[in-house]
Image 1 (cartoon, rainbow, N blue to C red):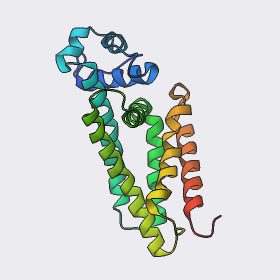
Image 2 (cartoon, rainbow, N blue to C red; image 1 turned 120 degrees about the vertical axis):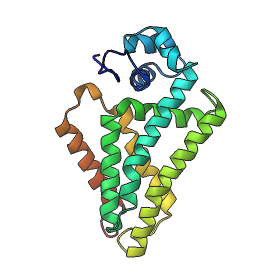
Image 3 (cartoon, rainbow, N blue to C red; image 1 turned 90 degrees about the vertical axis):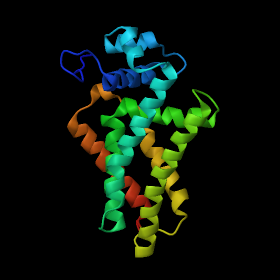
Length: 208
């Protein structure tokens, strides 16, 4: 895999390490991934990795935080827009679906981390708890838009948080079946559009 280095001629930097680690964790899982695996993916020495990180756990948590921050940065402005709730929800779903594909490794690892925390596995339990709190914040963005749609009369009356869970479950499952090696912009756009139509159609009042 060819990587563009963060600083030309300076060797791999922190972001390059995270990119390599996300691929390694996605391929091998947390337990089976070693610093050697990350260095091999990076095409650098272990010393380069240790220059930035003390442990595999620190790298893993930084990958997960990066994935969650990326999602929040993209979705929050859409959730807080001024237009109608159904339109905002469609754009939120489409963007989330696209990021599951275009940032596949980071988002796959983020999904893994939430499951690991539920099972009491993985690095530093309290740190995974912080990640789950970020996930809850993210889920609330969707629930708030669903609730506004209910007030506007465009979305079916159901518990907004309950309605959000299967939506995000379906979106996050993209990281399980999607093959980034077959990626192209047209396919990403088509899948994202279909998810938006499917999700909004299931929530819009009168569409069942």
